[in-house]
Length: 371
Image (cartoon, rainbow, N blue to C red):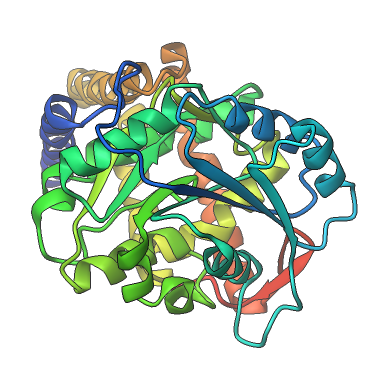
């Protein structure tokens, strides 16, 4: 048991050190940034049955202070009037272009094919892939375009504020922020040539056009469910520079709306994120040991004090990441519930991988849940 406690304490120390370093150096989008140059930008949105959000999204994009851009939406076989709502919202603004998706070729996933089509239709020197449910504040595009030459990067990805309302969202979605801050050394993502230190958020990825085309565009992730991170890896392997920035308050999105969408959304990606079934199982065991086992030790008198210290340490990491990413700090107390829910998600992902039963946006993804 003592060896186990040392392992748990060591893991928490490493997470704390990584988080402390990231909090010090993680770059942020600033509202007052004005780019020195104003290249033509293509904002590219794949949209499939997004009637509930597309109007707000279009309105926010067309309200950007940065003016030199086009907004292209690919209507990917929507059955809810997505394209009509987008067109009505734009009220004739010629910056908006709507194109229709074509039949999905063999060997392609829906989003990757939509993004590839968008990239081919775009005219911009900067290509920004973003999602239909991502809202940009008026200064956001200015900030992104200003950051790219300042950081001397070929691809810039933005971590957005996650809007969470239901209980299931509040205890699961904020873990994205905790993982970024505690598990992912920013300095390695920005400066290491190793592709294993690659990260990206598909909600906002800004590419120099030449870089995007040089790596092969979305053809390199045609059948890959984790398209964003895999694209970043492809860029790193060819010595292109990638960078992450904190877009809290500038870029916002609500990923999921209830437990069903939380479970299915994370289950679709988590297996690829871990790199396979065994790493996912190993990661699940790790989180049970670090964030759940100490609660059982409360019932063993000789380990009670140590258990309290470990629990408070785990809470601290969760609380700090919640504060930094503008989430509810009070939800820290639900960390054991979070572990249980992500265990359910992990096993659903493995089940889908084995049976090929996952359906997303009306399309069956099959067994392609690993990189």
